[in-house]
Amino acid sequence: MGLRVIIVGVPGVGKSTIVSKVVSSISGARLANFGTIMLEVGKARRLIRDRDEIRKLPVVKQRQLQKVVASRIARMKDSVVVVDTHLFIKTPEGFWPGLPFEVVRAMNPTHLVLVEATPEEILMRRTSDASRYRDATTIESLAEELGLAKSFLAASSSVTGAPVSFVRNSQGKADEAAMRLVKVLEAASR
Image 1 (cartoon, helix red, strand yellow):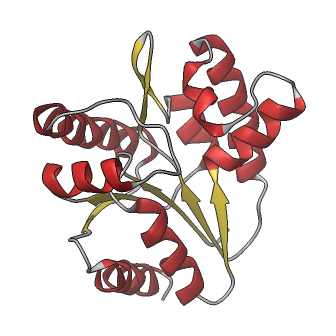
Image 2 (cartoon, rainbow, N blue to C red; image 1 turned 90 degrees about the vertical axis):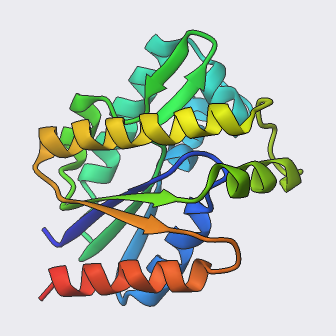
């Protein structure tokens, strides 16, 4: 197996932007967007119609979808698989892990990466993204989400043994952030 990199971040941090830049910068890299695969499976099972409905499913249904997606990703044999996902999902039942132990173990990551930004940057990105429906939020709640993300990532690292990296995605600096991560991954593949 080559590199299997799980890249996470709270909604609005610019994670998907970083992921696409990383994937396009590494020869042979394959993108596995966890939410997109969950959407495909959920639609096929007639559980949801769009991506934002995933987090509103009962936790039991979300967990079933996660297990299916994790096993699909685990079977990918590319030299570099970059998984774009979230560490937790805000559900009506509370925050729920996007990478429960059995899911993160099934994917067998070689690296775990948290994309970070300031709460102010994230709030600005969330409120300016008309393509998605985001729950109302505050700077204080974003600070809590960022802390929660680090806790979930540490737990995932402890379970898998994969090292953790933090990539700061400052406003207007996505290219620089992506290149810092590419350098980490290139060093790991040597």
